[in-house]
Image (cartoon, rainbow, N blue to C red):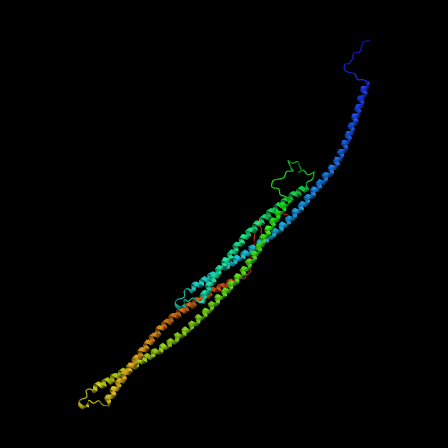
Length: 427
């Protein structure tokens, strides 16, 4: 029988084997205990974290919903403010257009007044007087020029205020657009769930973006935009009231001055007609007197010729009686009668010649004055014609004032977006 070969290695004793088995059992029992504790803690942690996560998600959703509501409220406030700004811009634009129409309406009165002044410069001689009509016309021109200056200033201020309102409207529009974008983003975030395909892990999502604002700054920004717009609207409303009051006052001033000018023109026209009629009456009477004077001059001249013939007869008789011879050359009663007759005739002829000269001189003076009166009548008729032309020219003012009372056709106004009725932002 062959001998068994010994196996290499150290052999353990039975006690060591038993100890090893006990140790393995103890370690297994310990690991199971540890595993059980870990499992329990894991289950507890899962439950706790699940509830925490669910709560946090719910709280975040609530915060998002509240934020959307807050932004929506501010959006409504900004929309309302922007709508009021648009209405105020349209009202101010309309008031500005009415002021421009009032300014344009002063062009014809100014032309009429200047034309009347130019027409009345055509008067000649003594008719070229600085009368109340000229004074009122000059006042009217000065008033119209002052009215044009005042209206132009109001138009300039209204244009500047429209630019201010436009800028405030632009700020409101930008703020509204930001609010709409923020609402869209928050609503999109609110609609996301853990099953949404758009979700993913991001790099450093908890960073604070540059340009971020605090809630206080966010509220103050919108409050500032609204306050600025409201202040601009208050200024615009006051400006519209001022323009309306100014237009009414200036219109009253122009109407009052127009009536004063036309009254002075009618009064002057009446005086000129009266002076013309008086002068025509004087001319007719002078012509009648001249005709009578010419007739009397012819009578004086005929009498003078007759007295000259009688004087010739007396002279001839006296001269012929000087040829009596001798004692018959006697200074008898006939001689004395003839001498007396000659003296009487010479005195009569002298008186007739003097009266004829006076009559002829008076006739010449009347003819000269008659010529002057005819010239003055011509100037008066010419001046009266100019006054009539001035009155006819001013009749254009009445037709203009009647036209101004017609309703004005309004042109649809546009705002910064180019739409007549502004839809602030798409809902």
